[in-house]
Amino acid sequence: MIGILDFSFDNSYPDSVITKVQLMDNRGDVFNDVLNFVYIELPKFSKNKENLETFTDMWLFLIKNLYQLQERPIEIQSAIFDRLFATAELCNLDDM
Image (spheres, rainbow, N blue to C red):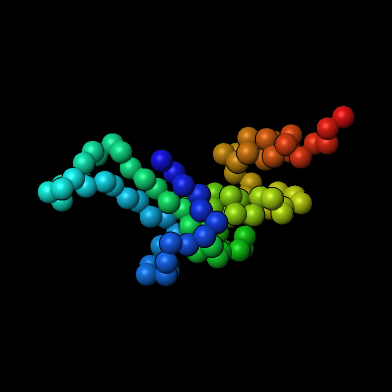
């Protein structure tokens, strides 16, 4: 499960944008190695487009800011994002 949050759980780990969680049984052992929860706390992601270094940075920036982008940032020209921007353009079309 991947949860994209528009709030932060707390500030115990202020630099931790992505938190991975696994369930534990009553003995303290991991319940299932395959069952994982990943929480992305968008308010903790504060990089601007000039400071993006990794694909993860680029994805987080786009998830957080796609709604307000008027054009595709020069810093995010990788082909991996072509489908995302094509879909966003289709979603932005007016109903006729």
